[in-house]
Image (cartoon, rainbow, N blue to C red):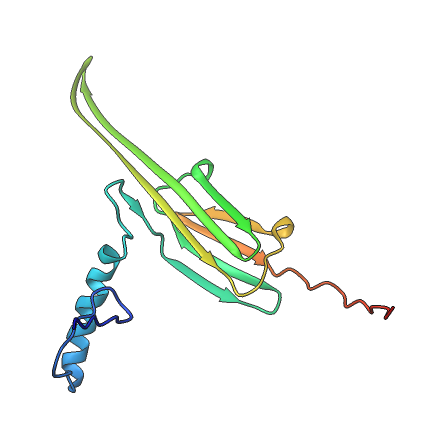
Length: 155
């Protein structure tokens, strides 16, 4: 008989004696948090990163802040499908140093960002607004107002 323990994180392992002390739990959580993005596939060989998000909710809107350092306004794409929001961006940088017509140093890098998340209510995509300032994407996503209740006639 094989026993497989399935924990909340991909790095959970069976430990016969659970650490009861606070320091032990802190160290264990630190290692799980550090390696979890690699285990969950947040970074791939394509150099795709997940931007960090702050999501807050007001009575009428969801306010989202996403960190996209180095990304230009034209390279950001946001799509809304009901409750699902997808943010994509790409940052390309090129450094080149010349002495006369001869290239002495040249380096290029590309970084892609992608993140999808689901909100607890549908978004009114027609009135949604997006703004990019200093590498921070700010989204104001109004909640879709529920349709008015309709009385059905009994046949």
